[in-house]
Each structure stands twice: as structure tokens, then as C-alpha cells.
Amino acid sequence: MLCISFFIIPTGSLPAQDIKQYNSLEELWQDMKTHNYIIKNAAIQEKIASLTYTSSIGNAINPRIPVNLNFTDYTKLQRNLIPGEFFGAEPGTFKQIQFGLQYATLATIQPQFDILNPGSLSQIKYAEINQKYIKNQQLLLERDVYEKVNATYYNILSLRSQYEILKKNTAVAEQILSIVQSKYDEGIIRKQDVNDARSNMIIIKDNQEQTAKNIEIQEQILSLFFENQIKPEIKENLVQNTLSNVPESISSTLTLQGILLQSALLRQEIKGLQYQYLPTLSFVSSFNWQHLSNDFFLASDATSFTYNNIGLRLSWEFPTVQRISNIKNKQYQLQTLSLNEQHATQESLTESRQLKTELEKAISQYDNYTALQSLKEDSYQKYLLQYKENVLPLDRLLTAQNDLLTIQLKTVTSLANKAFITGRIKILNQY
Image (cartoon, rainbow, N blue to C red; front, side, top):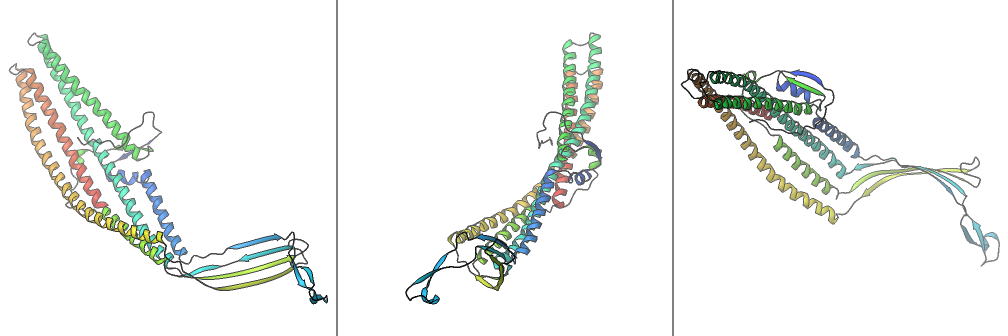
């Protein structure tokens, strides 16, 4: 059976949903992408990566304009001893002199930027690669959701076909029960045969009812992909789906691309750490305005003056044990990713061969089941006539009906499986 549940549906009433009809999986998928929270979150991560890249360009020169405004009240000014002879006193004597003004206001602006910073420049390339990696991860998440939608979609189509088969067989079982009841009323057969016919009818009817519930569960799962904002109604059926073309080849490199981008990120990160060993050349400047007074801050009779400077600053940070250890650690991680890359290549080839084999198996199985169904149908009709003519026991007729029912269910399941695998191949080719 194809049915696989990916979510647990909570009990209780669901929020109001808009009902919308879809004629194909592709049509449903395009609409679902605008509602699914996983895809929305992935899109936000892509925007964050884009912002990081833009910021890294600005950080390459790291412009900074710190501004400071200081108000200082020297509540007790410092006193200094000055030789007395400066004031006409006897040599060897000293006089206390108080320097400075009590209230000082200082405004400073210090524009500066990096002229050459190899470490910051390497971050631009890192952010660019990271953008591609985040996009790759977004597509992988999108593909994963698409494959789950693909499985749920064909679960519904398969269960609907099974329901119709069970519904028809319930009617057949009721017809057999009616025939058996008539024979019993005529005294031709035993009560046990009536019980067997009735039991057969109840079992098939129960399977029909359980299948209806399973359809409802799968439809709830499909609605959850829309965050329960939309209740999709699928108009397609399995017969229509078999008319779609089967892809001739399989091409999916997203996983491998992700590993290659991870390796590129690590290489760039190692370069960034190594570039931090290089000196940084910066432009620095300072523009200052000072206001001094003994009355109060910014007094009108205060003394004001300015002083400025500009220059270049060369800074060089020596390697640290921690940074050397980080570089070595990332080099080991790079070796691991190299092994992952080789494995992903082989895994992709194996997956392609496996899907092709599964598709061939599903097609062959469907053809065989279709042939068997025709034979079982013919046998059942002959057994029914023989039972009506009282030349065949009831258990043989019921066995024939159940054999026919089993092969009918297997036929639609194999048809749904063929469509499901075809959908998977299309998704892998799309992503």
C-alpha cells in the first residue's frame, strides 16, 4: 500500500478553510508554496543571507564616525608649587598656583575607515558563497516538502479508487447475500451459508468505511501543507494520470551541490582566518572643540578653541593559539566534506538506478495485475452462474469474489505507485 502518514492530525475542529479545486499535482504545488510555513521560513533565511552579503561589502572598509560630548566639572582644581623667584620672592621659596578652569566642555568627532583589511575583504567572498549555500538549502527543503505532497496526493487518488472498488464489491456482496437468502428461504441451503454471505458483506463494507476515513485523514494532511488555510479538492483521477509522460532520465545534484558549497565556505573561512594575520591599514582622524569657563558649562564669556589631527594607522595582530587551532580544525572538517562529496556522488547514482528499477517494477506489476484482474473477473462470473445453478458451493463463490477484490485493489495500488514514482522522478529532475 502507498499510504504513509507524515503528520499527526490533532483532534478538534479545524479553522475555517477556503475550498479550492485542483486538476493536477503541479497546479496544487504552485499554490501551496505561497502558504507552507517551511518554504516561507526558507525564503526568510535567503533574505538574511542576502542582507549579510550586502553588509559584508560595507564592512570591507568598516567606516566609523564615533562622536563624543563630555561635560566635566573640576570641583577642586589641582594646585602646583612654583619657585618663588618667578614672582620676585626669595630663592628656595615656593608659591601655590591653581591651573585650569572649573567647567570644561569637549566635543569630539573621529571619522575613520580601513584602507586595506584583508580579513574583511575575505568576508565578501564568504557571504557570496553563503548566499548560494542558503539558496541550495532552501531548494532542498522545498524538494522535501514537494515529495511529501507527492506521496499524500497519490495516497488520496489511490484510496479513492480503492473506495470505489470496495463500494462496488459491497453491492456485489449484498447481491450474493440476497441470492443465498432466497435459497435458504426455499430450504435449499443451510443457515450457515447465510451467515457466511452476511459476514462477507460486512467485512467488505467495513473495509469501504475504513477507506473513507483514511481518505479523510489524507485530505487533512494535504490541508496541513496549506497551514489549514485551504481545503484542496483534487479533480484528477488515476486513469487521467496514467496519460502523463514517464521521464526517461533522472538528474538531481542538489545534495552534491550543497556539500560542494559547504567545502567552499570552509575554504573561504580558513582564508579569512589566515588573512587576519596580515596588517590592517586604516585612516584615522580627530576633530575637537573645547569650551572652558569658571562660571558654568557653555558660559558666554568662556574660552573656546579647536584642535584636529589626521593620519594613518597600521595594526598587526600576531597569531594566537586559538586561531591556529581553529584553522587546523576546519582543515579536518574539509577532509570530512571531501569524503561526503564522494559518498553523495555514489548515492545520487544509486538513487537514480533504484528509482528507474522501482518504476520498471511498478509498470510490470501493473501490467501483470491488469491481466490477472481480467482472468479473476471471468472466473468470478462463471462461479456466480454455477452457484445459481446449484453446482458450486458458496465458499468457492465467496473465495472467487475476494480473489477478484484483492487483485482489483492491487491493480489500483500498483497504478498509484507507478504515478507516485513518476512524480518523484519529475521532482528530482525539477530540483
